[in-house]
Image (cartoon, rainbow, N blue to C red; front, side):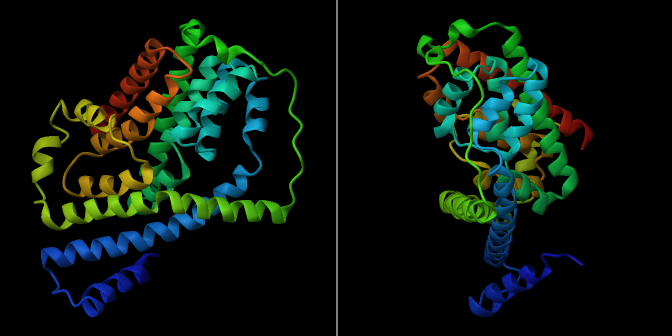
Length: 321
């Protein structure tokens, strides 16, 4: 039995009995989709973010820097990318993270692996993909994001581009381990509760906007319209999706509801995931923030390497899915 079936019954009751919308109309399809997805996503997010934030409470930034600064550079890229999954940071955190990692002695390539993985792979994206597409697509999303983050960091590390980082970044380098205060179970639960509420407060509007747009597409856009221009047989679909995603400012919470509807309307999975990854990992606002700590050339190198990885992943998904 579908675990979301009670939510479907609730959405049907609200749509047809409370709002009294005529069934099987375009409006009914759109409204029912909006109610169902909104309830399901918020429930999933609250449960999963709370669980992940408990794990995150054991890995504050100070401990992450301590771990990564003492690892082999390739192992560091892998660990940094894995930590990026459970320690998601928004673009506004880019500068303090970048400064903290470099000043703690973390190699530049390892730092970039974390900066790629952190926004690209996060618990919000994972729970939404899991709820909408199942574990296989969610697993593919995680693996592909990890591969892009790991190899992007390794490539940047081998390019020896430390000279493209602003000199002040290397000042006040931290030596030695960081002592962290102990935290009780009740404090971790309180942290998880506050963190979950904080995340929901920050992303709820993006979720509703994303679901709203998705609901409109679901109800009113013909099934073959988008597939005609962005189907897997169109060679330009993936790079075009990446280019469109770069200037957009959103997060996984606002994008994944669109991913669900776009795939439903015939847009290939690889193209929609490439679009989502470009929005979260190659956001223009983040580049503008990072301009304060690195030269434009390094930003272009970073964007080019990650962008090529996303495009390759999009084509690969379109080929195998």
